[in-house]
Image 1 (cartoon, rainbow, N blue to C red):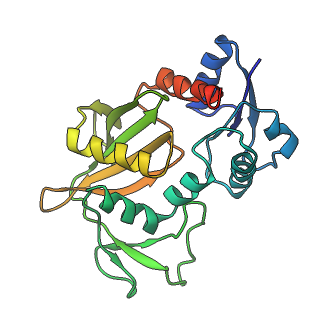
Image 2: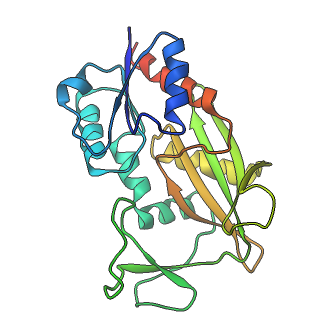
Image 3: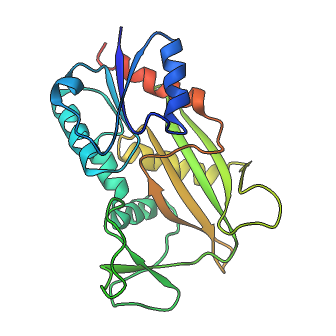
Length: 241
């Protein structure tokens, strides 16, 4: 019986139902909390390793898996690169996305402090940020694109995400996928050899959509892609077969 490890809390909103699907297919599933170490022996016994949290302990586990040939659903290189804000913005621009401006000259109106990596905590109020990122959004809605590769093809969903609490209506809802944006997200996925990614877009004053962030540990909230994610993770066990 192939065993798949998940580095996330057992009640993770995506990976709990995905693990149930995999168990129904005959896989053994193991959960490892991201704040606790995962032993090399545990990793070596796996047919695939899935990371659901950007955390230094999870990165250590991914590094060991990549080094020893255990297939990963987003390896350490993809996870670190897509957790680095400046690397991600540069990569998004290289695949044809419009991205916000970045300033290294201190605080500016319309710019927010940036973090080098997603796992870093917010800086103290009196500490300067390493850089500042333009906030081009003019609407209370962002557009989140989810992509997952199941080993044969890449599946895409788009979700409208309200950035302010609405008086009525849902906080998020499915929306149509823009073909041009989807092509850029697919290219980003391929560029880093990742199996899954989420990219957030916001509309600027010039009516253009800006790619403002990406994450290598997407939750797929509101996308209805549990089966696609399960297919993608299951396909890890066929690598090298």
